[in-house]
Image 1 (cartoon, chains in turn cyan, green):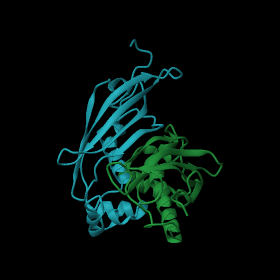
Image 2 (cartoon, helix red, strand yellow; image 1 turned 120 degrees about the vertical axis):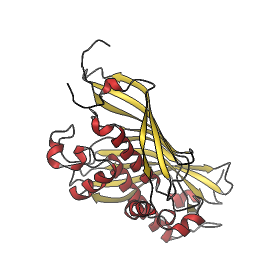
Image 3 (spheres, chains in turn red, yellow; image 1 turned 60 degrees about the horizontal axis):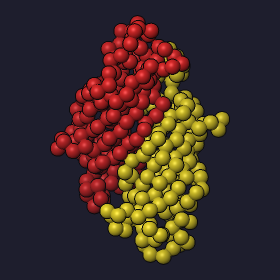
Image 4 (tube, one colour; image 1 turned 90 degrees about the vertical axis):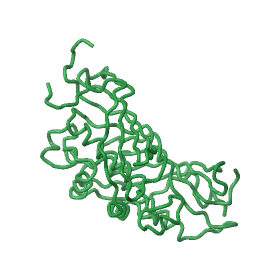
Length: 155
Length: 160
């Protein structure tokens, strides 16, 4: 048994989970970029405006990292998660610009119990991240592993 | 020099190696992925991974750091073909990302990329999109990370 709020059984196909709002500051964009992706459009406002991204834009990897934090706070930290083997796809649809406010949804698209480990299930989720204008800035999908709350219970 | 030569199509290029320290693992995790196995040695012992390990997104971000360094070295080496020197732009995304093994604190990871192909982008004249395989290996030679990426490239060379 688990005291966690989210176990495998809670991820029913079709369930849509809201991700918390996150404000993106210029300082954070530059901080991430200086460590991992120091291209001019991620480091400098003028360079960003002159680029095809149109402003000081977050590294796509930064957007992924911010998504991860949003997912952690929405459900992952209070779940029976056993990690994730990977990500099916990430599409950076629009630039994330300094001053944007991100929100998002995670929608369960598949859930199955492991054949080898009856206490473990695989949950596939499609995630969408939006900006304050309602535009999709990033789409991704992944499969995570979660322990069951009641292994062996009748399905 | 052809664009294929410049981009080293088909060759696996070593980007560099990085030793993941416990402090930087925790610092990244505190900001972006505060799961207990990325945050605390003791807590990690009781987790599925058994030891403190880096967020998978931290490993990806580090791949980007070394990828960019290598690209800047290559650009510094100069363009020996016709027309304007190719310039890299943003990436539309990636597919099939696999975190194959945990990256534990103290582990040294070597990053690589292999450019596969490039083609014209119909909607953006003068731009091409290059596809590439991105990988990372631990000190024992085991692959810890792989994904297939794409990047835009401003270039007036190459067949469409």
